[in-house]
Image (cartoon, rainbow, N blue to C red):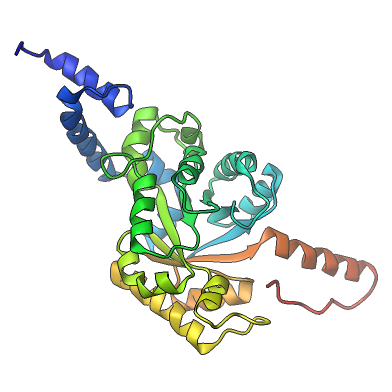
Amino acid sequence: MAAVNTSSIRGLVRLQAFGACNCPLIYGRSRIVQARLMSSSANMSSKMLQSNKLKQVFMEGKRPAMGFWQMLPGANVSRILARSGADWIMVDCEHGNIDDAAMHEAVPAIAALGVSPIVRIPDLQSWMVKRALDSGAHGILVPLIRTVEEVKNLVASAKFPPQGRRGFGSPIAMQNFQPMPTFTEYLQQANESLLTMVQIETQEALDAVEEIASLVDVVFIGPFDLGNSIGHPIIDGKMDPELDEAISKILKAARAAKIKAGIFCSGGEQAKFYADMGFDMISVATDYTALGPAMMDQLATARGQGAPEKASSY
């Protein structure tokens, strides 16, 4: 076999890292080189890590990361929520009125204000993971997880090779990190800088929560679906002891796995309760459910009436 020029190999390795070469001669070596590059970048405070407000709060460990749920479309809605002082905003593509185009508007609007945009995708499908991360989201949240195998497939969809199988090519994602990483820096830093989160809201996931927790960055509790799934639904805001026990079990599993635990709350009082309980990531309110009561309060004041009776948002 003829001698191979090492500079040519380096060039081909670079092409392979960008998906432009499938040369069997250097494929194995390119994976090793890429793994080393990603590993070395994880050992320093990368541009992407510095930009991920949610992950920074996690790493500091001084307080829970508080955020809001965006269900209404529009970049101006995103900006209002991001200016509130929140650490993160959940762009809800599952139950919210947020389609792909609205997601691509919300994510940069949130990130531009130094807040982490997190996308809840509608379903556990790899193309949805790719679209959310390619929009520049700082992390994804996946609903209705049931099995460990589902979580393994999710993680593979969210990570670049060799840790996963995420495709590389979006020129959009980099703009949502400041200072803005280059294409190469995004490739090297994304696996360690972006958050992979799953919702524990089914009986099956609850049963396997210890193993699931070992695979992801955050286990996030959806108390309404979890209550429905285990036979103890939340009715008129009342939570049965069995649901409380399930929530405690998930928090304990997160602590054992040395990852973070999050929970969806319907208001500030409940959020404070779970913050005191030790949760790391807490949703305080949604835009949709907060807007109506705020307007009703102002209207009652204008009419000289007493404040309307406060109803539960869920």
